[in-house]
Image (cartoon, rainbow, N blue to C red; front, top):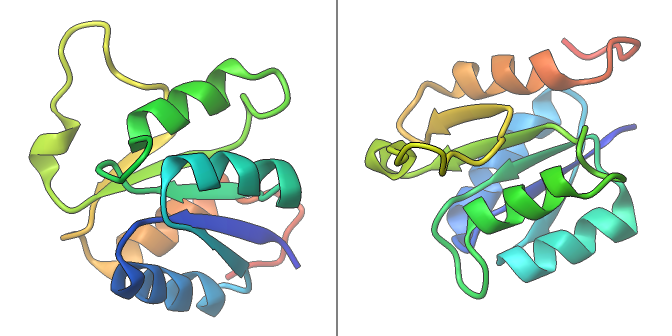
Length: 126
């Protein structure tokens, strides 16, 4: 079974996202801040990261930037998942190279569809 990393400092959001990802057959691991997220990626080699923007120690933009600049993790799909759409307004040239951007206000099915899009093609996920 494939592993997804959910990075959010809110335990309630972790639970909600986890339940959604488990419905499509993913195992889920968690990180509560950006520093822990980078460590979890090295330890567990997830197939996808769902990443909050505003977190302690290191924000989601910095995590994404580090993942995308590392040869070993640059192809790891990153879905930025924020509580406020205004957090996705970027100044020219400052947009991190996330693979998708979703608001936590979106329908749950939109998150599921986005995650499914980035899963390995040989998988049997719904």
